[in-house]
Figure 1 (cartoon, rainbow, N blue to C red):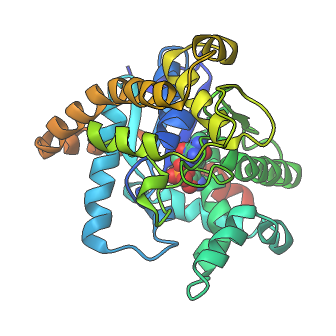
Figure 2: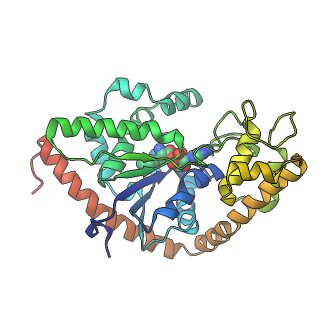
Figure 3: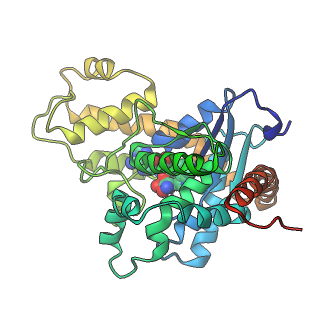
Length: 337
Ligand code: TYM
């Protein structure tokens, strides 16, 4: 069954950048939850390579990472039959709608985006126009598919809110066109922090490889990184203020095992980091092991991957082209003969 014929379920859209290897943050904040939503919703997931080039990428590496991310989406449990999985640059409507939305997005709005401010600091020699208008492309991604919900980690909430503002503005001028989407943030795992500097989010672009766990990391690397994770001088295992490192490890352990924070505190009551850190590592290793093994298999089968993203792009394009035609008409473009 094609998703666009099934109108009874709510629609979900989300995306992930292939700008590096995927981290435990991407997994717990986003992809693990996407897999849980696939029966209840019509889901569309996109590897956003066009967003990735807002920061300089090495072309061969970008191609490889795009395929790796696609393989990881499938390995994390997203069934390509149930979900539309595709690569953003294969559906040209994203760029076309982004241009139109650029004309309905204000300079001031884009200037306030924290991701733009952060990335401008990190890439001071390459503050390009794409980096600035990134949120309009993201709004286009979401609005093209009449998405009801956008499951993301907390760091992307501001962008989804901008997409809502742009949708409301457009609808206000031209009449009901876009569904106004809601961000959908998981209760646990929405903000996995760096292991070396737990005041900052775990990020694939962090130059310190010990600060993040990759979905494809080997078990011994996962164990080593958790053992080195920054905690504090109070050796007790409980959540609290000024305990960012321990809070983060408890949060990770709880999200992976499905336990509550209180249960985790009780489990490690009277125990120290020497028991706690390897236990967190072990839980993460076992969670990620099948994902890594399946990804390695899929990457040996590029033909299969191609059938997935080819059919995904075709299905996505049918929905996207319909919306783009509607928008083009509303803004006054002459109908394409
Ligand atoms: P990206 O590629 O940075 O991250 C993909 C998803 O992972 C979540 N995430 C995290 N969650 C918890 N803790 C962390 N440390 C962590 N790091 C990343 C992100 O919140 C995100 O949900 N702009 C988006 C990609 C995008 C998109 C879209 C998302 C493009 N178009 C349309 C939704 C809808 C981004 O850079 O995500």
